[in-house]
Amino acid sequence: MKSQLIVRWIVQIFLFILCLGNACYAYSISDFNDPVIADSILKKSYPACIKLHGIDSLTRAQNSSQFSAVVVTPEGHILTVAHATKPGNLYRVLFPDGSEGTARALGRLVTDKSTNLPDVAMMKMEGQGPWPYAEMGCSSSLAEDQLCFGWSYPESLMLNKPFLRIGQVVKPLDPYGFVVSSCIMEPGDSGGPLFDALGRVVALHSRINGPEGLNFEVPVDMYRQYWSALQVMEELEEHPKSKEDLGIDSLVTKLHAQSTLATKRKMIKTKSSPAVIMISSLLHDDTVSIVGTGFALGKRKQIILSKSSSVGQRPVAKLGNKSYTLKVLARDKKNDLIALALPKRLSGAITLADIVEAPFSDENLGEPITSVLPEDGFKYGILGMSPLSLPARFSTGSLGARLQEINGLPTVLQLDSLGPAERLGLQKDDQIITVDDKDVASAEKINRELAHYFPGDTIQVSWIREQDTLSGSLVLVTRMMREGNHPANHFKGGKSVRRDGFDRVFVHDSRIHAYECGSPILNQEGKVVGLNIARYSHTASLAIPADVLLVFLKNEELE
Image (cartoon, rainbow, N blue to C red; front, side, top):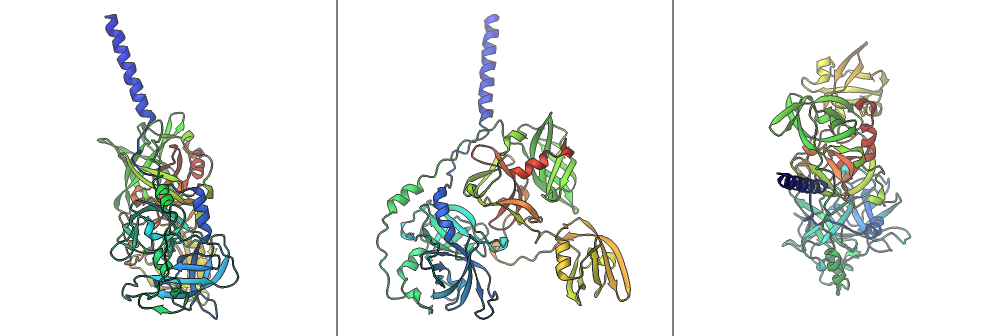
């Protein structure tokens, strides 16, 4: 009997150790190749990646959309794409360090006007160099699955620093003459450089094929072989007869070796799998779902953290076969965070010790990150832009009226049927004078004031009708956004309704769907570095950084 008891103890101890061992390794993603580019290579390529827009030669006023490009010689030769330029035209150039210059478009090679193929264009900086530049590589040296990365300027972000994205070569050359890559892009990225793993320009961003799909790049060998012909300011409607000798890539062996150095993603060590669940609630009469993440605050206190604007009335979490009603503890409108209480303890709640304390900086650019999703799901990406402020532009609440400044006052031109302004009693030609007792007697003033409010906020409005001054309160609604037909505007989950108006967020390329916001982001050591808060655009997902999360989690309201 005693020997049986001893055996039972040994078995139980073995099972305990086995379970403990599994718990120490919450999940393994060791079969995933990390897209890691050396920091020195990223820093070498960064200064030459530029943002441009056309300017009038006399007034210097902007006369075209922005696009991207790269300087490839110290004398200031610039590679970009034909659909963004016109020979002889002037362009304002902005470098990542904030310095500016002017460039003139040179040759433009387009043999098919319906498609702009092969979409090749060259420009040159005006004035004295030397200019920051990136080395050109050989697109003929590319092979499938090689690492690549790009620095460029998505139009939607409206920022003067490039956004880093890392991926792989899908096809070195497709039937249409493009390099195909997984480096996701959108309007504004056109003309931006694609680099190989050695930091050499190997292609230029041209177009995408379908939402979150393949990305097509003009091979750099096209520019190299027609270098002399592209120095002339003219439209080239056929391939020039004279070609430059491309030679042999002396670094091809080194490139192939570098490209195979993509390390296997480490097994992330955590005490247990992070508690990540789905939350459903009633928002604007619709049932919506969003991800929530469990955090342990000490003294056996646990909360679920999620995206506030996506959690409405009667929030519920489903764990297994049971549903639990959640209690709202606190909302942080500035950071779009919500803390909820669950009447059940969660396994794997993230402790404060599991959150990094040091804030992200430019030194962290390119570091791999993992977003943890419900049911052991993962999405991978890299830190593409260090924390920044994104003022409210798309997410502000709407009065439900179209306004125009007339005689110095915001004047109602049109009212949305059954919108908040119409329900309050505003009429066409009414002139708004105050919002929450603040003077808004100009288009600039009312736009600046309304930027502080989001859908669901209640504001007090005063307006003039002929000789009368009237006032009342209304609840702002979601602004109606008209998206174009470009594939970049249409992808699974869509853009988050609240996607800006943040004091501090970082940008990454993990393709988080809008309903996956509220999920935690881990670094290679398994530490929490942020919480996904918005799908901003086709290329950009936003996250609240760890230092901001810590401030919210230590709030007295949560004690």
